[in-house]
Image 1: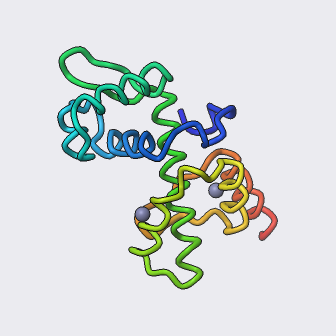
Image 2 (image 1 turned 60 degrees about the vertical axis):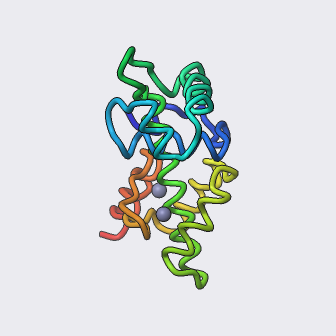
Length: 155
Ligand SMILES: [Zn+2]
Ligand SMILES: [Zn+2]
């Protein structure tokens, strides 16, 4: 499963706070305890529980009784997009005078408001870069198709 399996999402579904939750859960990997999430994100436990319930009812998370939460297939695909969005935007800002650290922290403040459509266009105009300032960038199938065509026309 990747982003491409879910053509319908726009990238604007989640608030900046919820974006942080999904990224945190993906980074931790597997099933993550509610207490780990609330201390990792420095949010009080009752707010954490409420937010996790909202993310679960929207289809991004599964509750695992007594163990915590993990990402559904939709949650995984969506979080892959969230990471690509962060990395494409921070890479973009480093081309305009920001250091890697500056770019990462600026982007963290506004990334939740940039649509998937815009990211796909920027990704394409940047030639689908493989490495961002804070990690590898994985692309949607639609990106991969373009990369393949470019490669074919070169040879
Ligand atoms: Zn970053
Ligand atoms: Zn791409």
